[in-house]
Amino acid sequence: MLVRFLKNWTLPLAMLTGTLGYFILANVPFLAPTKPYINDLIAYITPLLIFAQLLLTFCKVENLNELKPKAWHGWLLLFQTVSCLAIAALLVCCPMDEIYREVFEGAMVCVICPTATAAAVITGKLGGSASTLTTYTLLSNLLAAVAVPLVFPLVEPHADMTFFVAFLKILSKVFPLLLFPFFLAWFLRVCMPRVHHFLLGFHDLAFYLWGGALAIVSGQTVRSLVISDAPVSVEILIALAGLIACGLQFFLGKNIGGRYNDRISGGQALGQKNTVLAIWMAYTYLNPLSSVGPGSYVLWQNLINSWQLWKKRKKEEQLPIE
Image (cartoon, rainbow, N blue to C red; front, side, top):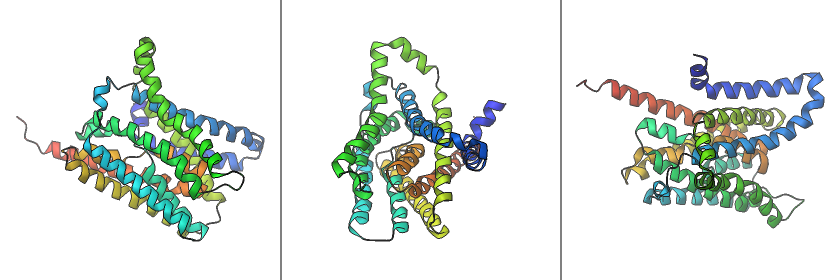
């Protein structure tokens, strides 16, 4: 009963835990000396949790034939690339107030962020192809591993380092985080099958790791809101940018995938994002307040997924019993 409750309410419980955790740490005096150590711990544990999620996800791939790219994969990758570059060009070439830059930065992260590791589960429940979704998860991680180090230093330059140094710094953290789990999973399958089989036994662990990482980044997002001097109207605009990005990507993904008889997988591939990774990237490499964009995306994409699952259940209930 408890496990079922936690699984059904992981999203709100994780966000609530992260929020309460931040306020407790920020307002309880005797915890003040622990803040530097907790900040250092979070900086290390968040990417480790993301890495572990991806490793467990890619361990489920049975053979490379399952990862054969589809035509609609190319169109979705093209959309992510072009839209990210367009927003980046706007930020680089068009002067604007800092508080409004955060709106576009939040939207940019929501667009370039790779597909969620849990998207294959939702896709399967909706009747889509989990294997083609897994392929796009890998491809979108590859795209983000290349695009983020190239684009983010241009959008949010650092005074203490050149573009090339910033590029290498981000590349050294993002590229291994997003791609090494796949190569490690395949290495374990070929060279250490017992370890690989052992990891397959933890088929639900990725879900709970995602919940733990979500709690951490939710606390970071709340911290960004609390310490920011931006008007509430700007924070609302950032959340609306996340809503627009979410709705647009689900719509385009479904329509493009539908042209290749893979409507459900296309919608989930482009629309359901690894928001834990997105919040971490925004908080770490852009203006921290821009993390409100992917932070709100968590809510928008889960509302859409909940509606889709409800709609499918209603449809199944109306089918005649043979």
